[in-house]
Image (cartoon, rainbow, N blue to C red; front, side, top):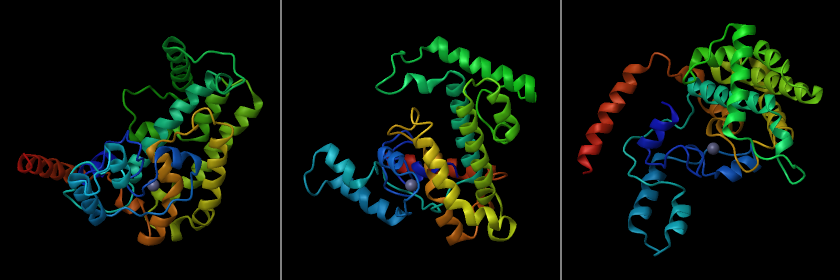
Length: 281
Ligand SMILES: [Zn+2]
């Protein structure tokens, strides 16, 4: 299941919530300032307990205090989900983020961020130009056509050395090109760990180095790419950096639960959701 579904089933606020994760209680700011060290703590039974607190407000707290107490539970959880992440949506979510990083690097966003910067924030027209430049470059160099909505195929093509090399041709600073290449290299080292069905056997070296790689990846985001991760981080980057080793240790793999070919499951879910919505009216 993708995150949107898990949030609905477990009664959590929508994916834009301050409570960034379906697996732990971190807020977006906490997840950005500490990108790697988070344990899986949420559970269906706790979500149910929290819903009761949210519904009854036994301590007479303000809306804000209550929300903090229940960590973003805002509806009745109705179906227990496996506390894991979906490998396909992980790829898609992270590729969406890299697509934006690439645009920002083409536009030299780092020059617009922070106290010392005299340049204004980019307007829509500038952003549109950066995006058009990226699309054109990827089309010319890789025959990769832009898509309306990120999908698995586009994500697979974008998250490659070839794509980062194409982007680097549009980036002026040698230092930033180096950082982009390192970021992608780390990502490609981490990816097999959530994609393979048996990481301990299929990619033992990458599994061993995962925590080290994710730590270095997080350092890059917090330093070179600070302009994007100043108190913010995306839901899937958080899960990728913080929760993958714990899930692999517990379940043996993440890839085995991938949602490819799981459309029938999704259909079943939608029916269930409809039934539930009717009941609670
Ligand atoms: Zn988390």
